[in-house]
Every structure is written in structure tokens, then in C-alpha cells.
Image (cartoon, rainbow, N blue to C red; front, side, top):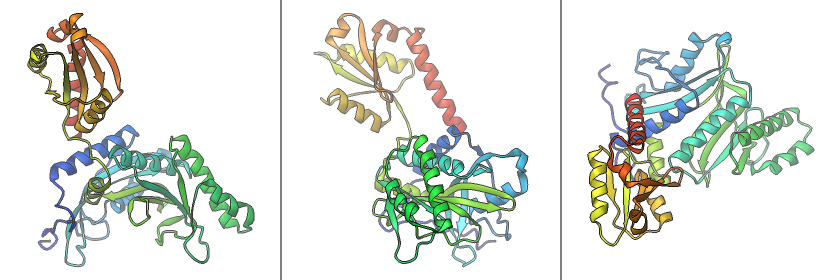
Length: 369
């Protein structure tokens, strides 16, 4: 056991090892998406089902857990998992890592796939990864010859009309049904179809698999499939959290770990009155930053979204003359006029609403941690 506990941290030659804080931020953002989709957390065994060593794959332990605990009467079941694993323990060179994933157990074919694919797409987009392509494959389809990957539904139609192979026609029909469901979940970008590369695994059902890869096809960002354990079928995906963080750092934009309540923009001839408003907001317990740039409203909104700012507060001469300032919600990009008197009054409805949102955000953060 002492050998197993001698961990070696994984790293990339091109990057510094990811900071623990960034891993926590990323895992919380992923966890929040799982929660919003109605997935419940499970804790797989610390030790491998097959041996007494520390687990080297969480998704396998999650599958064993499902096989032992869920009956057909309880289906469908949606679970997510996350935690530490040790890869390479059997080879004597253990490496510590972290894994997260989901399983949708007992969902009908194509419906389960569409759901978990849509959730994976949301994870990518919420972390700023835009340059990727969605690829669908099928365990029953294996076209002879060179790898055959095509884009768009028109690619499928040519095989559907020409082929007499029932397995191929059945697989293409599954592609079309899955495409329909993915579109209904809101995905509008191009979909690629792989007719040549099924997963080579003993536990795969002769059914669908999927992956999100870099646009040149050189790197798989997230991949998943339908699996079978005992009498249960489950669709899911899993990924190495540290490798995913490196992907986000290369191709995406991890959201800031903390939030700023207000970015105040002074449009007055002097800053005296604006600084008084900033002082009062800070006394009320809000975090406030003063903007020193001459950015336009659109540029400020983009900057604020990138920097973790929740609200823009614009103070101008004309508005102040009638006891008002302009408040812009950065997420919704909706502006409204707010009375300066309400800002100064701690008991005003404006401050009660902001304190409610601040408390809600804090409580959610405590729950996630």
C-alpha cells in the first residue's frame, strides 16, 4: 500500500501544473451543470472493485455501484461522480489524478445520448471552449476501407438510400433520431458522423458513441458511449479533470473564481459624487471597482463578463441631476434606472434585493464546497 500512496502529479511539458484553486473552480462549474440537469451525486468506493488497490477509474466503480443498487423499477436514474484516482498503480508508477463524469441509467436509446451529449456541450461552452466538433459513431457500423467521417445529415442520406446492409441502415436511422433529439435540446452547429471507428471494448452495447474533439480531429476533449452492466444499460461520459483544465487553458476561458458586485463607470465632470456612491456601496457590504477606461458600453459589458463583474453602474451628469444612475445587469445585459436615494438607504428595496442575491450566491458556494 505504501507504494500506491507514493503519488506522482501529472503535468504537461508546455504548462505549469494546474493550481489547486483553478481545479476547484472548474470542478464546481461542472458540478453546477450536473446539478441543474437533475443529476444526483454518488460516491464510488475508494478501492477498486476488482482488487484491493486504490481505484484507477471512477466510471467503472460507478457502474459497479449502479449494478448493485438500482433495480428496473427505479429507472431512469441520473447520477454524477467526481473524485481522486490513481492511474498506473499496477505498473508500479502510480500517478494521482481526478475524474468526473455522469451516467444516465435506463434511458431509452437516443434520448439518453441526446441528454448527456447536450450536457457535455454545455460544459464546453460554459468554459469558453467554442472551437470543437461533435462526432457520432455507432458500434454496428464498420465501413470497409479508409476511415470515413462526413459532416451534416446529407452525408447520411447517401448511404441510407444506396445501402442494402441492414446493420448500416439501422445505425444510420439511430444517427438521424439522435440528431433530431440533439437539435431539440438546442444544438444548432454542424454534426460529424463516423462510419468506421467503433470503440473496441467488451462492455459496449452495439449502439451509439460520441465525442467532442478539436476541430482538426487530433484531440478528444470529452467522449462517451452507451454501456451495459449486468441487466442495466447506461449512457454517460467521463474525463480527467486536470487534462480538461489544460484544455480550458489552451482553448477556453475559465470563469473567474470570485465575483465583483459593481463596476462603477464615472461619466461626470468630477469623481467626487461617484466616489461617494462607491463608498456607500462598500459600507453596505458590496464589492466595488471603479472603471478608469474610456470603453464603450458594449466593450465594458464584454470586459465585465470576462472579469466576473455582476453589475455595471453608470454615473452621468444628466442622470445625477434627476437623482438617478443607470444599472446594467451584465449577464442579461438589461439596463434600468435606480434612485441614488435608494442606494444610500440601507433599508431600500434595491439594497434588499441585492443582499438577497449576494446571500444566495454565497450559500450556493458553501453548498458546492
